[in-house]
Image (cartoon, one colour):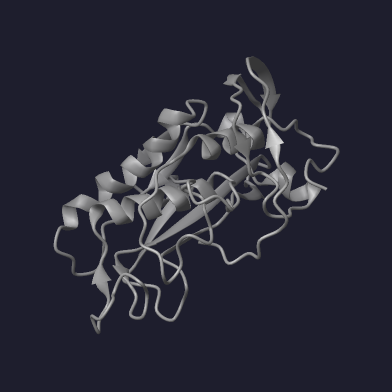
Length: 235
């Protein structure tokens, strides 16, 4: 989870109906729900809104998941668990698609495993989409998602145990969904009901969360912004 300070929460509400939208090379029919999104919950520059989202020509986004290099009880559970976290987003927002690849050089998003985040207030981390120019001169994105297999000593998950403890499958799935949201460009949400809630995790929380209507509304709000964007939508 990124350690960015929270900014003022500005409410945005969708109107009912459907809209055909063009954004960032993406053209899709968007369900426009009457749910508030939290796109403006963290301050970003105009340049960041223009760059921190994937282009249509990059889809499907390729993902590489290496084997877990640490001693765990069920090593075979981690690959399908990460797949499930990514596909949970594409099932709710079909304009985003993923393809899993067998080599890190083929991947736009790479998973990096950690035993635990020692001395850090995080159970996972991820880069927002990073814009770069390929060797052929084409603008592309990349990201890295960092996932720990254990909760670090001193966090709410370890309780009275004096050593890091393995996350359960449900716990790690919830954390992975949150970090994938960041890799897609989403900010933290101030709402406890959203999987992207930032202040609801950290050292002291262990509540499981799933992708909410607010999360999906925010994803659509981000990818419906025109490109190039000429005015910051959250001044």
